[in-house]
Image (cartoon, rainbow, N blue to C red; front, top):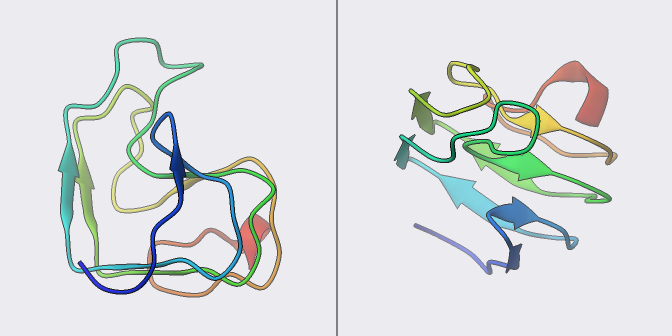
Length: 81
């Protein structure tokens, strides 16, 4: 793990967070609520090379993006870039 982390209920909800090279698996039970890594109202984060598998959201190697801008890294979806 690298950088500064800001968490709230397994979600990034701050600016300037770094996260890379981790394995995130088996998080949550409710698909509409729980996820591996989630960005909400988050800008300028680095989320890269994380292995995301078997989480409630069903996503593989990408984050769940609720809202955010200028985020980068291999796990970031287009919606949050």
